[in-house]
Length: 202
Image (cartoon, rainbow, N blue to C red; front, side, top):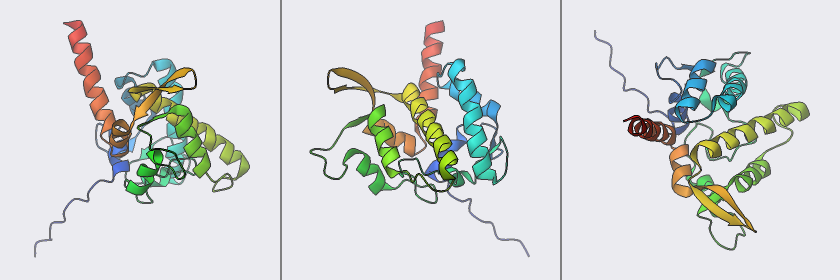
């Protein structure tokens, strides 16, 4: 009797995001793969090297449930931590209501069309639970990790400018953030950079 064929499981948005850093599709992301992924997006090596180690240290441990520098792509939802925007739900899918709240926060005078680093960090810190699940020291480290994540995103993908007071600050548009949370942004940025480098070399 032939075994029934099972349809492949649809990837969550969070898995699609992680798979950018897993070019050989072995469902694991090593520090060297994280580094190559970041530099392919245009991040300077001086930033990418420590950040790749930091990300793999945290996410390796969370996704493997043990000390590891290898991130498990199928278990990437375990890498969700308290100091995040909450846009990924418990399964790693895009939570549309949480995404909308980034740009239409309660009691806001008007919807926003883009977010600065400071605005996004304040949202993250407001949603974060300082006591769970890592305790005071773990909370401090998780805050630092979260700040590094947001800094990297703005370094790579800021596509707008926003006037805050008398300062013009880099910002992320709603369209770009949606692509990020859907797992479509990094392949797009890498492709654009390859095209730009090819044109510059010709």
